[in-house]
Length: 262
Ligand SMILES: [Mg+2]
Image (tube, rainbow, N blue to C red; front, side, top):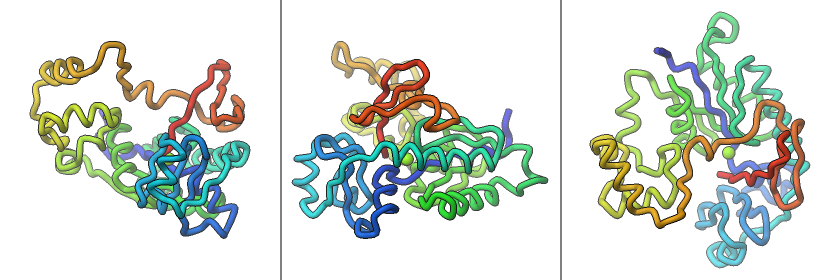
């Protein structure tokens, strides 16, 4: 059992939009939407206006008329991803990619070589910024789940450590949406019942929770689990597949996968 916080979850901030802002100084500090038909990514300035990933382009322009819409440049994103994964692999030999722009890094056993997990995370953020020109947020915790939740809370451009003794204190006040695997549909079902925090979820008997969430799902609804939400790609970003012009990625299996951005 892991008893120390040695798992890092590293996740680039607003990845596609950040690459666009990196490559075009005129876009920096401005609301940027990648993708005209459907929003593939939004800069934090666009998110502040209410733009969300997967929103229709029309709805996005309504909430943020001043946004600059750019066409996706998949080869640029693939190249940036590859460069970031090279930094990950310089950091530790144990890298587990979750998608084009995020990975878990296990830094246990590196104490004498590279320093504490916090020192390693700080250096990783600096290296990604210096070598690739992108901001990356890192969560540090005892488990992958907690590290992933921590990076979500710390965004953008942040570093957050969850000490083992403080895990429940960290989790319980969070809104239910922060739980990995809880999407908008599940969150709404919980909120409809007055359950708004992780602490409230923790007080509910597991079988009651299953009944509550399953019963509210319309027939044929697919529930997105953490496994399916994080499927996908392994370490060599950009090498083991190819992009389609519509933003889909084909891995070694040749199966197309749509990457959702955050
Ligand atoms: Mg990301």
